[in-house]
Image (cartoon, rainbow over all chains, first blue to last red; front, side, top):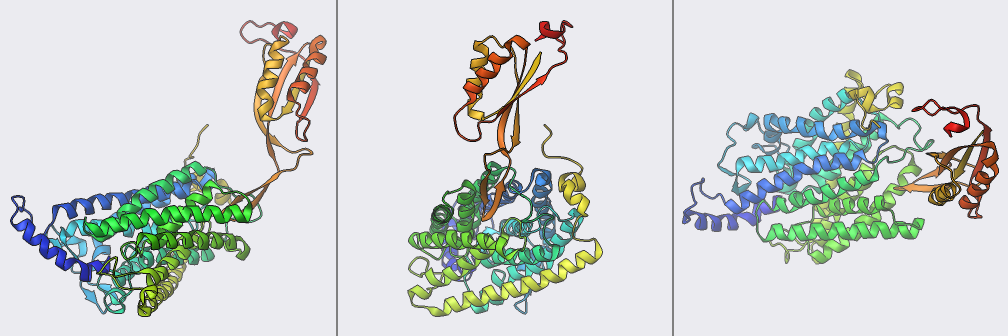
Length: 436
Length: 112
């Protein structure tokens, strides 16, 4: 996304100005392209659907007594972040740069954000760009909830979300896409959010899993997914929405969006098959749960690379994602921490692999606005990818520890043991998912 | 009167039902149950986490019968539910004190 913003789009935007200015439909502010605008608005809606999709993906994996509590995590974050983004999230991420670290308060409450061309996407209205970016700010904290599923206090989740979005998401988003140090100076590539969304949320997740602690009975009693068809439905919605996430990150509706669409679909499919094959060889049976987990791992891994690599590279990135993430989730119970729904195993490992793979497979022959990776003769991009990942891991990890401790000392992070046994649905929300 | 209660494999249920109706049994109750016997459980793996499933799903059927029909019913169930493998289940037989047909108030064998 940022590379297109900083080098790919100006030429395209100039062309659009010429085309639109002679058009009878040029009633909008100059430079706005209706095709691009339509695609960004549709993409924003597609990415919105990913968060309820994630709710089902996670909801099916927990025990039936926690299904509503788990779905509610994602749903309430959709609501909280929609408002936080308008009030101060957007300006902290995309406002005028302050020292490469955070955006200024120029656009607080969306003052000055209107129908004019977006500064970072000159062919679409600023409001459309803001809303598209807002959907990323929504799903990122929702991804974290898989780590502390089945034991987090609802009030703690609400406070944590507001603090984390403000202190972690907006600055990291600024570093990479908003004109901050990673995108503008280091020159690392992140097409649609490998570092900002996936590495960032996964590090926060593993930090939270350790601080909140294991679920009662973890690895001692059977804690099995209660509805895997629901999980598969959620994964399907994620895959569908991911076309907006990645192809929308082209911020235009032309060839670059088409490339990202193709690499996204290809990597997801390759990763689903490689996970299922790894499982088949290792355990003797390919599971449906494994296939959909692999698809999500592939979607995660292709995210930073989607607009910079060829479809053949996307197959290799997908195969790697399926295998690496399969290994990661198999190691989890042996280490003993309870990242309940494998946020680290899928988004952390898949995101890190995707960030590094971008440094390997990126090619200017595919996208002249990108850069060449290690396999195309440019080792410096790989180094930049490593530095961007390490910086995100360190900042997200440390800031998340501070936020969680703060929430623990004030409202308390975890439900009482009795409430955990009863289930979050009854103890936190006073209702049950299934009344038969 | 006797209550015949049998734990059987799911896929034998239709067989058992047909065999019982063929000898004139006019009603039965079934329930899905879990349990263990000589048949061992199995492993299930969810994203690398292994769970040993110790209780296996079975079907429990209950049939109320008159004393003179008891042996025939038990034989028919045993024959229809049998596969010869471990895990075919068991048949339990209890004394049945009384039966009431709710609609008419008939009691005893009349109500079976």
